[in-house]
Length: 184
Image (tube, rainbow, N blue to C red):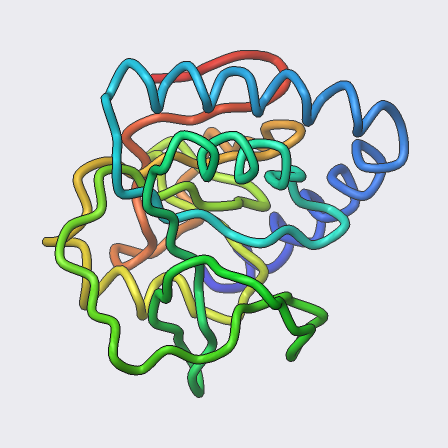
């Protein structure tokens, strides 16, 4: 199983790199529009999202819009092999793996998250996530899934396996958004 997952991840990363070179701006704009509409329909006030790497959908335009609307935004703050969420705030610092984070805010504790927006490399028929292979999201969600109402996967292009390549502990999506459209 792990070998199939590794091969699938490698294949998907190659596709994502291509998708990120050609038309990324237009794809990201489409995805951000779909995400915003979903957030409004769900009436989400507490939103977890990520600060993007080059191959991930650029969420900064969405972040700016949601901040203007006074929605509460949370982002990952890496700790060891996992992360915890902290409120999105400036200044941002570049940390491990080139990921940006706000400064640490230990005093904060998440209660409920309406929507968690999660980047994916790919997914399989079970709607479970294949990520970059570090397991950080899996460890976080294992502890916090009870506090998260909806999980939304995002990718510039959907890399999908009809075979099961994920494990039981991999995160499962409620909703998937790609440049090609929304998938329930």
